[in-house]
Length: 310
Image 1 (tube, rainbow, N blue to C red):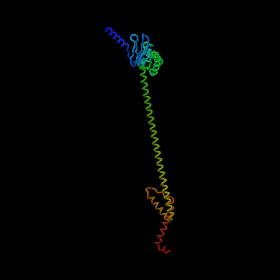
Image 2: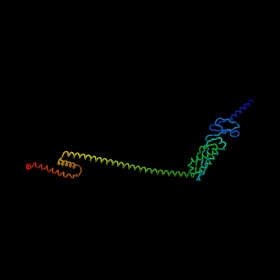
Image 3: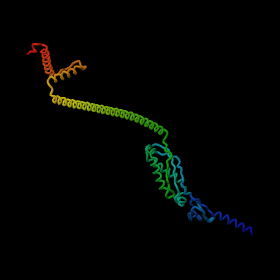
Image 4: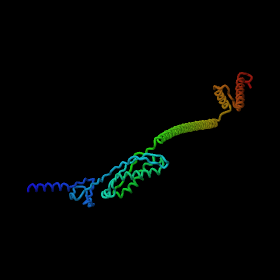
């Protein structure tokens, strides 16, 4: 009897263990009872009826699907090899379990089909330079198709768009020629800019030099004019003073003649090889000769006794 109780206890213990289910935080679980969907359970400790209910866990984390490479013909009849990576996450565990048999395989086939459609509408050059456009269009198509499967495509990334070998070699030659052309253009542009800058520098230097010379000439002219004006003003004042002094002193003609001769003597005492005598000097000299004769006559008169008696 005791043995039967122990057996029943052990059976109930293992039965309880079979009914205890733990769901991880990133999981959701669907419970089927006798083959029919019964409920969805949340993360944590859950209990089900052993042998009657079945718990199916669904990973709700973001998943990655690698789309294998495939050959695609572009709009201009070039064959390229394309592969991609799809990131998705389950939004409804019930739909992902009961609306699609193999979600990963269905997603891969759907991606391959749409890749052919998207790339087939583009030329080779467009397909090589429109990765973002292809990613966005493919993501929209896959997201719309997988919505009824209880999943959301978060992003699509093209890994490789590889043209044939001969096309790749031609593209390399084209790229090299384009780079050589750009280098030549840049060198020519650099030489042109250097010549322009050099000419502009020489122009500015000449302008500044001419402006400096003009300013110097202006300064010199101003200085000469100031000098001439100052000398003229000084001479004018000197003449006025001399003229005034002469008038005040009431000089005789003899004194004027003597002063004139002194002035001529100073003029002749210079380093000049020629001395220009003013026209008025003739009259002065005649006056001087008259004075000299008068003086001479007076001297002779003092020596002659006859003349003394007169």
